[in-house]
Image 1 (tube, rainbow, N blue to C red):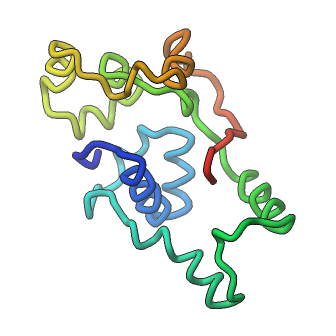
Image 2: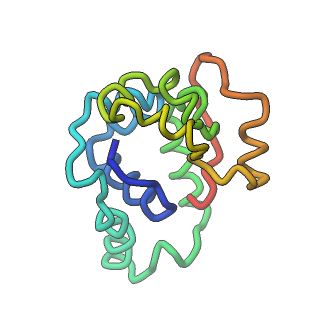
Length: 158
């Protein structure tokens, strides 16, 4: 969608961009990433500055940094926020080139240049470091079947 690879930092900046689109767009994307085909991809889909807003506001108001740790009030707030989220099927699955057109048909039709998937497969390009044990574990058993959305997911580092 954004025309670039997705490093860890790139994903954080994309996530900030996505959140900035609106609560409605953000929640729709969590439930069905293909819904992003209806969203204008501007600014490279990156909004790094947005990632600092919450910490700056907390520091201005309290003198504390959000990175100093959390307390029970934070945990309660986090649980409240999670109640409004529905995660789509396969959110934990690292899709590969031969799987993305089936899983994200609208995004692929809109943003992938014709022949990209065939080229990537022909030259054995992968989206993931497949020697990584976590990737191997996540891919075990193949892509998930389309079933009702999940309502809870562990998001490491959040």
